[in-house]
Image: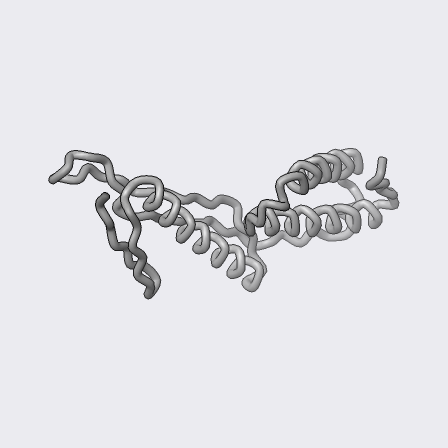
Length: 149
């Protein structure tokens, strides 16, 4: 089996071509996305779009498709802070609907959380943070949200 060496961000990785190379490069690029998320948090921005690409090419010797690298990118925007008057004018049913959707996703992810996947844990934290923000937004509009209904 062919072994390929990848270098990036000061580290060198060696993977067997095939599934090992695809998952190894993808895991590295996923770590880059985590770095982008940390940057967004520190810079008071939010990620509006992120993308991971696995680059493939045909090996001239074996004429087989091989992994030759990866790329990750994220688009940021400044967080928009709305005025209290704008918050009060929004529809409260939309907030309730969004909270229900997040709670359903949280329930689904909790069923697979036991598999020690760090991305599931991060998504669960993000969902809880969003639910708390939406609860505060609902309270500013005078609406009580029952999370157990």
